[in-house]
Length: 213
Image 1 (cartoon, rainbow, N blue to C red):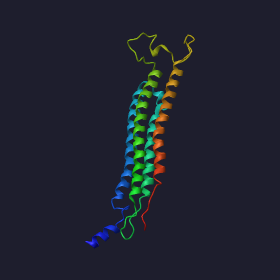
Image 2: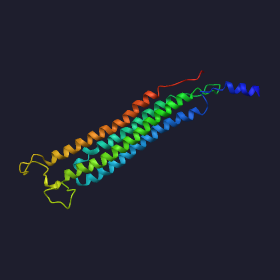
Image 3: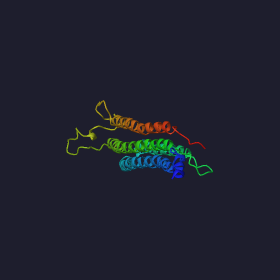
Image 4: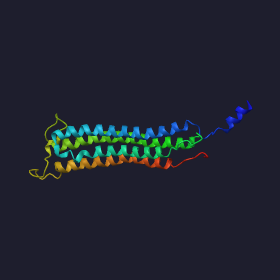
């Protein structure tokens, strides 16, 4: 009994064998959740881009920005996942674990910061890009969004150029540009959410405690 208690006292409290599982869970969280958000945003914005391109093919390359910004979120998760994976050491030749619970929890927190931030940012980019691309496409195609209203109150009453506009101060092209700029600003701040998670993850991942070799 005394021998058993001595062996238990010599066990590394801060470096159990299951600590590695927590660390790799942080790696998986960073990669999987970020890629999920990236795929979500690409899906939402991509479907709207294809539908809008049927009526207005000229706006496809201009409105591809939401898809690009959604794809960048997956890169954030990849960067953090690689950094965390490289920070997990192997056991030494005596089969002793050198990876502490403190470091594992820090890596799990870093992975969740990046993954969940990328997930919500990707969803936000997808939804904003969905409605934004459709709005720009509707305006470019002079499609009225209110079929029951008169022609004067609809969007189609505003021409795409100043030719024959009767001295109107705002043209259809200017309206289209205003819609695009507004969508772009919302996309930038949505992308910033994932960037905030990346910055916090890089800082937290530096908090380590190594067991004595």
